[in-house]
Amino acid sequence: MSDHRYLTNQLLIAMPSLADPNFSQTVTLVCEHSESGALGIVLNRPLEMRLGEVLDQLSLPNKDPKLAERAVLRGGPVQPDRGFVLHRPTGRTWDSTLEVSDTLHVTTSRDILESMARGEGPGEASMALGYAGWDAGQLEDEVRQNSWLTAPCDESIVFSVPFEQRWNAAARLLGVDLSRISHLSGRA
Image (cartoon, rainbow, N blue to C red; front, side):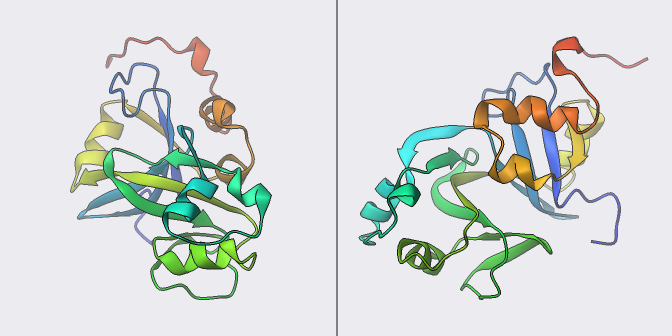
C-alpha cells in the first residue's frame, strides 16, 4: 500500500500494559489495513488442536505425519471457526487468497488444505482459527493510545520462532526489551 499510515504487513506487538485477555502479550500480523478497518492474525497463541485434527474434521486424508503435528493458532476472537493459512507464495493460485506482501499470503479456502494434505501445498505454512478485527480508525486509535508497538514483518516470527518467544522476539526487532517497559503508561 502506498499510504504509509496503513499497517499491512506490520507486526503489532502488545505493550505490557495491554490488559485485554485476547491480546495481552501477543504479536499480531496485520494482513489487511485500509480506511475501512484492519484484519490481523495473532501469531503466538497456539491452541491444543493440531492441524491433523482439522484435516480429519474436513475429511481430508493426510499423507504427511509432520503436517498433522503442526500446532493451530488462535488467530483472534472473531469467527473462531474460520480457518486462515499463512504461507509463502507457491506460484499456484487458490480460491481465496489475500496478498499480505510479495512473500507472504493468507488463504482462507479449503483448496490449500486439500493440497497440503496431499503433500503438494506450501512448505512453510501456519494455520490459525479466527482473526483479530478492527473497525475504521480503531487500530490507529489503539496505536496512538500506546496499546501496540509496530514493526515491519519479519517472516521468521511468522514461521520459525517458537511461539512462546515470538512476543519478545518481535519487540527486539525494534531494539525493545519488554521486561524493561512499565506496565503503566502515560503521556508527557
